[in-house]
Length: 232
Image (cartoon, rainbow, N blue to C red; front, side):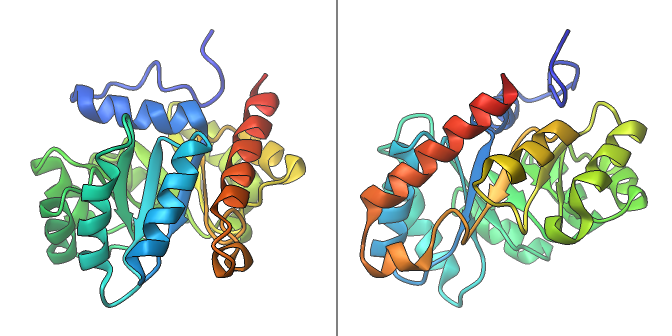
């Protein structure tokens, strides 16, 4: 019997998309990060990869995000099996821009139907942010195979459990308020998520200020180990 939140019964037409989403499930952790300094961004993505991450979400939260993302995409080519996507996207124009830069998936904090239609037409993974059963239903209608529950700290694991009762096959990723602790992670995975998105609680500014990428690698590795332990 497939585990809670398994993708085994989800029909995904494109093998490449299937691989990326299964990688999300396999590690259970998606770092969510933005920085306007390419050297910092490179250091973070390398530390996360060494720590076991195979799917990384850079976010469109700075004026030079497209420039940084393009450089980061080229830099990430050296890391075998790493998929790099873009988050905090709100319209088709930015969706097209980042897909042209090589984004392998598009994440939005909101459920924007025209983005779903565009991504489906262009064979791209679209992960919309949803905060209600209605939004989840509409996201599925527009081709989403995975939805982002946002903000996670407001909606909570209880919302995931309720959504899974209505959409048992649904793949869910919460972001916002997810912490790298056994208690917090256990609440999400017990509720049925396939992975979690984590930003500043995974990648503390204090470590970045010291260029402590070895410390970041340790946090990432320990977080993935905690997720593995919870799942077992």
